[in-house]
Length: 195
Image (cartoon, rainbow, N blue to C red; front, side, top):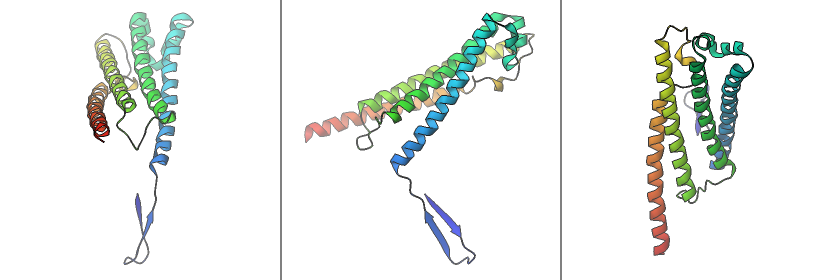
């Protein structure tokens, strides 16, 4: 990474080079993924706790996310919405857990990146992304259907079910990358057998 500082004299430029090694970058990515994992776990726990608390202890808690009108209209619909929100956020937490586990266990070998561990990692991320896309799209369609009912629902952007198409395309791209890695593993093993 190069950063250019312009001095007072326009003819003279000072260059400052900041070098970040791959190991340092992986450490930074580990902490970012860990932070995202913890945040999504908290969000997921919040949906699960509020859903259970509303049904078992106090129905006044249905005001969470301004869904009191939905709970009063039909508690079953409220339960489905909370279940879908819980599923989507829990799957996102699992996805980040897989990333954190890979970076923590140091299973990423930069000298031989084409390994079966990396192939299975990419397939896992691809599968999780497609499942998140499915539940996100289902949840979004369910909420759109509920908006047609005579219920005062908040804006759809307040819910964590948007972006299903993005998750789907990410899953497809990760699947294609996994297949490229599989081909790289085959070529690497053929080269090792030839030597």
